[in-house]
Length: 573
Image (cartoon, rainbow, N blue to C red; front, side):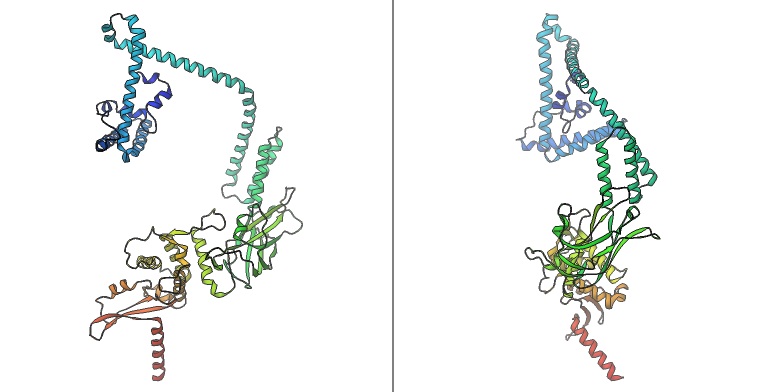
């Protein structure tokens, strides 16, 4: 078979040894071992043969890996390792592997039988009258087989070469013209690489405009017009000009109507702006649907913005070109029809900044525009908490290149915990973050699983669990409770928290476990479960039966005790 294979057409070899499943290298390197096994016994219906098939599969993979390690040829070694990895896909269906090898060996026998039968009838009887003597000269027979197959292959190659020659003759003129275009493209690519090396990857937008202009000049110097490249450079210049408007100072992401705020927009190609009439930027407020369709539909204003225009000014000292919108405010807002249980604090808007600008060296003005980060518009301070939850979810879990302003409905708990920890430390302004016990307690609280002791990391937490559904038995959501804890800690307990004196986030079961067997007077501070922004004192004291047990002072009891204590001190003095 090894002598026959080199003369077979590629299609025949690929059909006999399918590269994805059983490439020819396996047959070559494991030939003796494969032929010594009992493959004919395998049938897909014989489930009891599965263990035997799996054993042969594992032997095959192991032998391939061993041969790969012992092979000094790097190409063969890498090929054998890749084949051994690919064959692991049969581990779920080892019987399929056994049947496949069985069929391959059967096809080999049929192929050999067909060729030898043909030669026996057409050659052997003519040259060897004695049948026994013909079979004694099997080497001559094999030689003739190879000659016949080689002749067929040569004829096939000749036919293919003739077809290739005809095709080359027909396309020669077209290829000669295309060669000139390819040479020009190569020159352009060399110029681009040269400019990139000169300016570096940190080049400014102005540098990129210069590169574009140089390439356009090179096109003009070459006699033969290349409209495709001219159009491409024009589009790249347009994208660069329109993409150079950025919001340098974002507006507040929670904006209360009638409240004043400011924002700054910067144009990165300020030094390229044509002199003359100042560029006036306009700001308007748009909703989420409008933000998604800015490229195709002009956006209408869905709210009334006060002080919504500013002039683009160039600062020679800082070499920056900015427009600052001062004392802006939203007088009124037009909300879209809400779907389902969506609240006004879940509706996202954005500020759209736009202008017409002319660049030096360009004949026509360009319309430039950019939107801010999403904002939530509220009309009352009581909405601030829920609006902030919407913004936190958007900032923490949105994808970089998303469609405005799409966010996932669910995220893994590990991402949620990381967000809560970052928000807590930045809001309280402390280096003492949430520890493992705090994380586990918060997970138990948001998932309502106080007895769950396993790892929560990959469990999915939804927006509804975060700030839509109230906690069981409470009139507030998880975020409302957590935000209250942050406010309490920031205003009154920052020092104690930073020094590790407040355990804070701990459940009652864990609390009793910690205080068990502690001496009377031992106490622990934790954040209240039942009240927003409250703290509870758990302490060990003797009960009526004179046995130590754990007592809890609620936030109201603490305030009452503090008031009584203050009154006693006052009367004593």
